[in-house]
Image 1: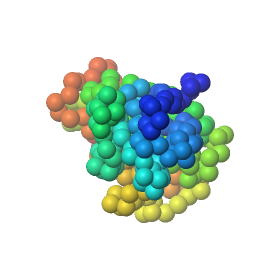
Image 2 (image 1 turned 45 degrees about the horizontal axis):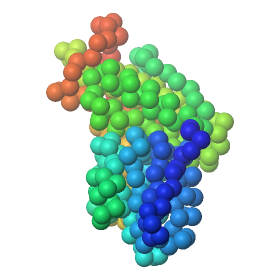
Image 3 (image 1 turned 135 degrees about the horizontal axis):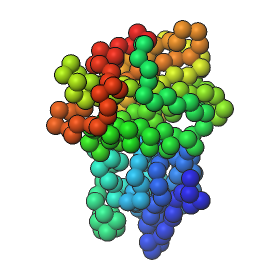
Length: 113
Length: 166
């Protein structure tokens, strides 16, 4: 597992971009979960999860995103996912979660959403 | 099950080894004629099965054994037909009838692993092992459009090897 599992960037004062780096599985989902909780505690207006460095995600990653989405709704934070490859998108479709999340193609599109 | 597995791996129940197991399964499935996306999905099913053993069977203990065995499958005309995977553990036995995915309309974290396994694989069978632990047998068929694999004729296992009766 790489030293840096998740990168956090800020776009201005109201948008946070969280970028998992590498596979999101049971071994690194806890780190992603902690990072998302910390960022959501600050109640940003928008949280973008950029998945363009993620080659693989399992159900622990999905669970982390579902949990974050629920927290975000309570906080009034808009969550946008972007940069999914077809393998990552497949698990969202298998779990029928692709309609639960706002998913766009690119980070640029997420910033404009 | 009398046929010798083509691959037999024992790993400890440490999540750090999940990526290695996925890469092994995905690479082998590629050689068996599956397309890239299906290779990834089969690896996902194995990953989810291992995660369930680690999470529910071994309660996150990282030093317990898990075995993965793999057989390529062939049809009656000796064409490549798919893959059979068996995952075994020494965890506490549970009623196989309880191994069902949850209702997907109930959006909540967790509980998706069994649903994913049953969605991805063509055949799934949970059963108790003879003395201790559980056995999960999974089969995935190669779509007829996929490229045939390159394995020797002597290494063939016929399609009927997918039964879940050990």
